Image 1: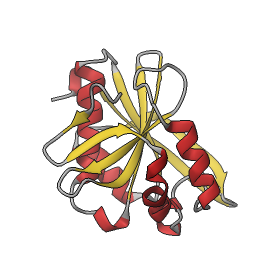
Image 2: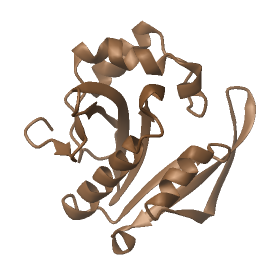
Image 3: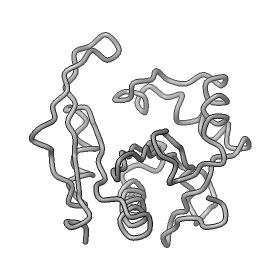
Image 4: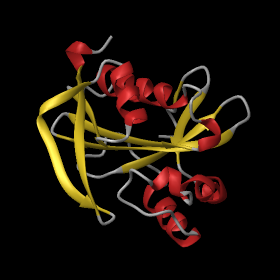
Length: 177
């Protein structure tokens, strides 16, 4: 990943480093960031484990979640992370952006960069994200780049002791820009 970083004018996606611990902990420890995730707010130990599992990521590795750091190129600060799992010519994506950088278009840039990479470089046929039905920000974000709600996926599950409904949003290579 380090030899061919993915970037736009404002952001860089790179492998996660051990030196990213404080920055990742600063937002993954927040309830508002963990709200629609399967995980609870991180401890420092969980953050260190997350980093250990995700450093030196290979974007095209099949069947395994990999994580990438989202870097704001203006100040070179880590502002979030994204994750991808590639399987059977499909890529599932997810992302977390620090509240300090939300509502500024960074998540949309991450999503666009990942779609560009997977459709134009990696040869993936479909990119999708799964979100809680009440996570309207995530739904609006995915719809804003042309992702559509899958009519054949609606998962009902208990997450953190509460019944939830998850939706799947999809975009195919032929529908991408």
